[in-house]
Image 1 (cartoon, rainbow, N blue to C red):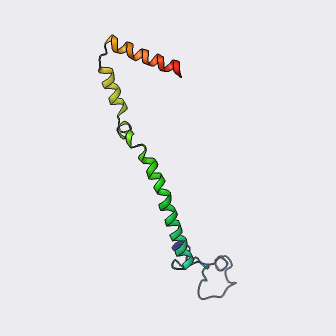
Image 2 (image 1 turned 30 degrees about the horizontal axis):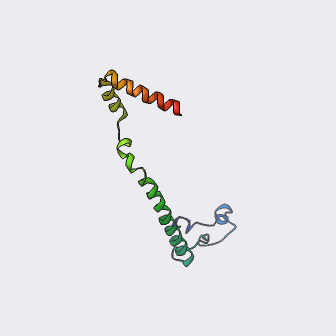
Image 3 (image 1 turned 135 degrees about the vertical axis):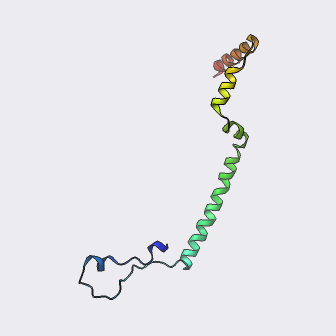
Length: 104
């Protein structure tokens, strides 16, 4: 709002010599302390605060995944490759994967 206060009118700058004024008339603008401005600022603040509450609740639904989000994939993959699995474990994993694929 302060940026638009005191902007000189265009006519005096464009038409040299046409206006014989000792001052540059400024464009009309609202004052920051006018009731209309204060009411608008208050309504915007209330709307923003009420809009933030559901966003915070939405973000909270992902709290259970924070550890997963922080996971370094490259580091995890290297540690996974370094593990040795027995045939029994590999067979169980394969059976689980095949069962899942068949059900989807």
